[in-house]
Image (cartoon, rainbow, N blue to C red; front, side, top):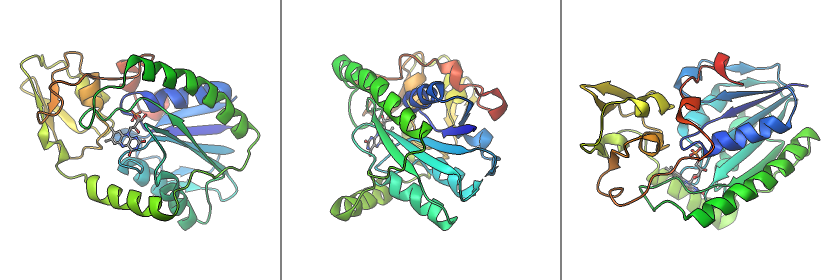
Length: 265
Ligand SMILES: Cc1cc2nc3c(=O)[nH]c(=O)nc-3n(C[C@H](O)[C@H](O)[C@H](O)COP(=O)(O)O)c2cc1C
């Protein structure tokens, strides 16, 4: 009765949720969705498959989309999704279900877990109180979600409908554009070329050239580079100059370094 959880993460929030769920369910393998693992194109042996992902601009990160589109899955596999989000799952469940429908299957159960918002280009780091509330609620939510998954319960309540679906679809298409979004990242004089940004980037989008990061325009918007920089030297335009940085306090940067599937739990 094996379970495989495929997760994508930037600040470590979603990794924490995926890790905590995997700790509750026996015989579970955790695999990070990242550039190095895009060669995984089939999972016909897991009894249950989970996609644990952050919500970006109301939807799923592109890499998660590409990964699920490419993954061959048996039609009778129990498939669950868990959105880690600042406010709500937006159209992410609709998007995953649409991809699965095209493969002749569908999500069996979808859940969401609220985590501190990680988009410091848009807003400052949530207060310590809000963070603590999220972390405490996450523990409770993870137990509920894990129990549902163990019992293979069917649960699909958080799809967007009506006007919310239309607005979120508009937002996703308008504001979530890959190309050269990362051209606005820059480093202050504090950058010492340590390379952490390059190692935590799930898209392998950063090279260190002359001891400075160089972004290669395949950015997933996950903010990992900016959030994990030990010197807090990475900025986005002038928007982040006065803002704090956030990564999940119980995740360490080096847990995101070795992301080849053979190194995962
Ligand atoms: C580029 C970006 C866009 C985001 N958009 C949304 C959103 O539309 N709705 C929402 O609830 N949270 C949004 N968030 C917050 C994240 O979904 C949330 O903080 C999540 O836990 C991040 O997980 P991760 O750091 O593991 O990727 C956004 C975060 C980022 C970085």
